[in-house]
Length: 164
Image (cartoon, rainbow, N blue to C red):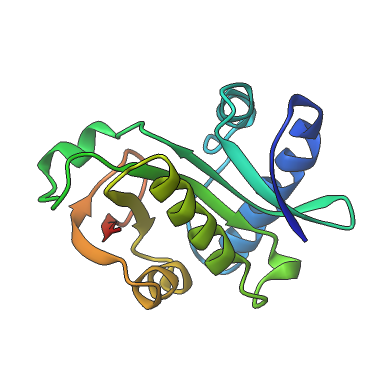
Protein backbone atom coordinates (compact mmCIF):
# COMPACT_ATOMS: atom_id res chain seq x y z
CA UNK A 1 0.00 0.00 0.00
CA UNK A 2 1.27 3.41 -0.90
CA UNK A 3 -0.04 6.96 -0.53
CA UNK A 4 -0.02 8.90 -3.78
CA UNK A 5 -1.34 12.12 -5.26
CA UNK A 6 -4.16 11.33 -7.68
CA UNK A 7 -3.81 12.21 -11.35
CA UNK A 8 -6.35 12.81 -14.09
CA UNK A 9 -5.88 9.23 -15.29
CA UNK A 10 -7.20 8.05 -11.89
CA UNK A 11 -10.57 9.80 -12.29
CA UNK A 12 -12.67 6.78 -13.28
CA UNK A 13 -11.16 4.63 -10.55
CA UNK A 14 -11.81 7.30 -7.91
CA UNK A 15 -15.38 7.79 -9.11
CA UNK A 16 -15.88 4.05 -8.65
CA UNK A 17 -14.44 4.26 -5.12
CA UNK A 18 -16.84 7.05 -4.17
CA UNK A 19 -19.78 5.24 -5.81
CA UNK A 20 -19.06 2.11 -3.75
CA UNK A 21 -18.83 4.17 -0.57
CA UNK A 22 -22.08 6.03 -1.31
CA UNK A 23 -23.88 2.75 -1.97
CA UNK A 24 -22.53 1.28 1.27
CA UNK A 25 -23.56 4.34 3.29
CA UNK A 26 -27.09 4.34 1.87
CA UNK A 27 -27.45 0.60 2.45
CA UNK A 28 -26.57 1.27 6.09
CA UNK A 29 -29.06 4.13 6.46
CA UNK A 30 -26.46 6.92 6.39
CA UNK A 31 -27.51 9.70 4.02
CA UNK A 32 -24.36 11.82 4.25
CA UNK A 33 -23.53 11.47 0.53
CA UNK A 34 -25.89 11.12 -2.41
CA UNK A 35 -26.12 11.35 -6.20
CA UNK A 36 -25.30 15.06 -6.10
CA UNK A 37 -22.34 14.99 -3.72
CA UNK A 38 -19.57 14.21 -4.08
CA UNK A 39 -19.95 14.20 -7.84
CA UNK A 40 -17.70 13.86 -10.88
CA UNK A 41 -17.04 17.61 -11.02
CA UNK A 42 -15.98 17.86 -7.37
CA UNK A 43 -13.64 14.89 -7.67
CA UNK A 44 -12.17 16.09 -10.98
CA UNK A 45 -11.57 19.54 -9.45
CA UNK A 46 -9.80 17.98 -6.46
CA UNK A 47 -7.56 16.00 -8.79
CA UNK A 48 -6.80 18.94 -11.11
CA UNK A 49 -5.89 21.15 -8.16
CA UNK A 50 -3.52 18.46 -6.86
CA UNK A 51 -5.45 18.13 -3.58
CA UNK A 52 -6.66 14.52 -3.73
CA UNK A 53 -4.44 11.83 -2.22
CA UNK A 54 -5.09 8.16 -1.89
CA UNK A 55 -3.93 4.73 -0.88
CA UNK A 56 -3.52 2.15 -3.58
CA UNK A 57 -3.41 -1.60 -3.19
CA UNK A 58 -2.81 -3.83 -6.21
CA UNK A 59 -2.90 -0.72 -8.44
CA UNK A 60 -6.39 0.21 -7.22
CA UNK A 61 -7.47 3.07 -4.95
CA UNK A 62 -8.90 1.73 -1.71
CA UNK A 63 -8.97 5.01 0.23
CA UNK A 64 -8.71 8.73 -0.52
CA UNK A 65 -8.85 12.18 1.03
CA UNK A 66 -8.82 15.78 -0.19
CA UNK A 67 -6.63 18.30 1.63
CA UNK A 68 -6.79 22.06 1.16
CA UNK A 69 -7.62 25.38 2.83
CA UNK A 70 -11.21 25.58 1.55
CA UNK A 71 -13.47 26.49 4.43
CA UNK A 72 -17.22 25.95 4.14
CA UNK A 73 -19.14 29.14 4.91
CA UNK A 74 -20.88 27.30 7.75
CA UNK A 75 -17.54 27.07 9.59
CA UNK A 76 -17.69 30.82 10.32
CA UNK A 77 -19.84 30.26 13.42
CA UNK A 78 -17.65 27.53 14.91
CA UNK A 79 -15.44 28.34 17.88
CA UNK A 80 -12.13 27.06 16.51
CA UNK A 81 -8.98 27.29 18.62
CA UNK A 82 -6.95 27.97 15.48
CA UNK A 83 -8.23 30.06 12.58
CA UNK A 84 -5.50 28.77 10.29
CA UNK A 85 -5.81 25.08 9.47
CA UNK A 86 -5.55 22.41 6.86
CA UNK A 87 -9.06 21.21 6.03
CA UNK A 88 -9.88 17.54 5.39
CA UNK A 89 -12.64 16.88 2.85
CA UNK A 90 -14.22 13.71 1.47
CA UNK A 91 -12.27 11.09 3.40
CA UNK A 92 -13.35 7.76 1.92
CA UNK A 93 -12.44 4.10 2.40
CA UNK A 94 -13.59 1.32 0.08
CA UNK A 95 -16.23 -0.71 1.96
CA UNK A 96 -14.38 -3.91 1.01
CA UNK A 97 -11.22 -2.56 2.69
CA UNK A 98 -12.76 -1.19 5.88
CA UNK A 99 -11.47 -2.38 9.22
CA UNK A 100 -7.81 -2.34 8.11
CA UNK A 101 -6.88 1.02 9.67
CA UNK A 102 -6.98 2.92 6.36
CA UNK A 103 -9.02 5.80 7.78
CA UNK A 104 -6.40 6.21 10.48
CA UNK A 105 -3.63 6.10 7.86
CA UNK A 106 -5.37 8.89 5.92
CA UNK A 107 -5.61 10.95 9.11
CA UNK A 108 -1.93 10.37 9.93
CA UNK A 109 -0.95 11.37 6.39
CA UNK A 110 -3.14 14.49 6.64
CA UNK A 111 -1.58 15.48 9.96
CA UNK A 112 1.97 14.98 8.64
CA UNK A 113 1.06 16.99 5.54
CA UNK A 114 -0.26 19.76 7.80
CA UNK A 115 2.92 19.78 9.89
CA UNK A 116 5.15 19.87 6.79
CA UNK A 117 3.19 22.85 5.47
CA UNK A 118 3.21 24.57 8.89
CA UNK A 119 -0.49 24.46 9.65
CA UNK A 120 -1.13 24.66 13.40
CA UNK A 121 -4.28 22.54 13.20
CA UNK A 122 -6.49 20.29 11.12
CA UNK A 123 -10.24 20.94 10.68
CA UNK A 124 -12.94 18.66 9.31
CA UNK A 125 -16.61 17.90 9.62
CA UNK A 126 -18.36 14.54 9.86
CA UNK A 127 -21.99 13.58 9.45
CA UNK A 128 -23.55 13.03 12.86
CA UNK A 129 -25.32 9.91 11.57
CA UNK A 130 -22.01 8.23 10.70
CA UNK A 131 -20.99 6.80 14.05
CA UNK A 132 -17.96 4.99 12.64
CA UNK A 133 -16.50 8.24 11.30
CA UNK A 134 -17.23 10.11 14.54
CA UNK A 135 -15.48 7.38 16.53
CA UNK A 136 -12.48 7.44 14.17
CA UNK A 137 -11.94 11.15 14.64
CA UNK A 138 -12.42 11.12 18.41
CA UNK A 139 -10.14 8.08 18.79
CA UNK A 140 -7.44 9.99 16.91
CA UNK A 141 -7.56 13.04 19.17
CA UNK A 142 -9.93 15.31 17.25
CA UNK A 143 -12.02 17.59 19.46
CA UNK A 144 -15.64 18.52 18.79
CA UNK A 145 -16.02 22.26 18.17
CA UNK A 146 -19.67 22.56 17.15
CA UNK A 147 -22.33 21.61 14.62
CA UNK A 148 -23.23 22.85 11.16
CA UNK A 149 -25.93 22.02 8.65
CA UNK A 150 -25.80 21.50 4.92
CA UNK A 151 -28.76 21.65 2.51
CA UNK A 152 -30.66 18.44 1.86
CA UNK A 153 -29.13 16.60 4.84
CA UNK A 154 -31.40 15.36 7.62
CA UNK A 155 -28.80 15.51 10.36
CA UNK A 156 -26.13 18.07 11.28
CA UNK A 157 -22.40 17.67 10.79
CA UNK A 158 -19.99 17.76 13.73
CA UNK A 159 -16.96 20.01 13.29
CA UNK A 160 -13.69 18.63 14.61
CA UNK A 161 -10.28 20.17 15.22
CA UNK A 162 -6.91 18.75 16.10
CA UNK A 163 -4.11 21.05 17.15
CA UNK A 164 -0.67 19.95 15.99
